[in-house]
Length: 296
Image (cartoon, rainbow, N blue to C red; front, side, top):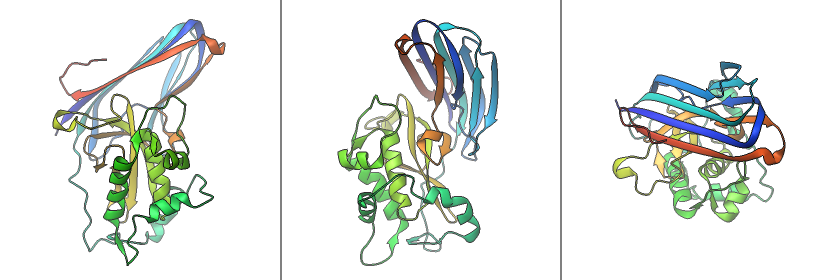
């Protein structure tokens, strides 16, 4: 099983020493049968007054730090070694209940999936719904895999990846109108399109492992990455990365899952001081095979 080490450092810089409010850190990879955390370390400078770990409403690991010391810098360094064993390529068989769309969720499961099926963002003129219906066969039932793969590769081919300096994730209609955005924008757009078809989908934050012959053409690396999980009866949660056209968890290291991107922010906190005290933020991330040196 491949062993990977993730080095992630974020440093905030200020013109003069400031006080810090509570910071929430969501950087620890999410354990599962295909991903196991073997070792993890979080170093914070200046050292926090208290640091505690919790599981949020989705079961993600979150560290909460509070401070009693002023400083003109604040840095978070996370190192995690994981065992990554992505599942075989995703496929449905004709015997699976979700092989064709539309399909029904089990009565027991639908109770827990409702918030992942209900659209969260407005679509007053039905543009998102119309875009989603483009992937349906007008002549009859559509193989569900064709919808999911079609959306994943369709966004990859038709949209232009661009970095944005604004905070947060843009509205899915803005992504559709401009046909551009970040990995977080693409993920939210695809999630909202799937929800308009009644398919349960959620947001995933994590890392992209760029290596070997797959490095060519990948975008969204060098920072945290975002993609989509879709829930299908008998198949469970399946990953789809519309930024890179990846189906399944190959090269994807999940950290957090959420209903909305605002619930899966890798690092969030406040400082006490004037707005012009903030100089900037430096982020360096490196995902390597275990044993390789860090370059952060």
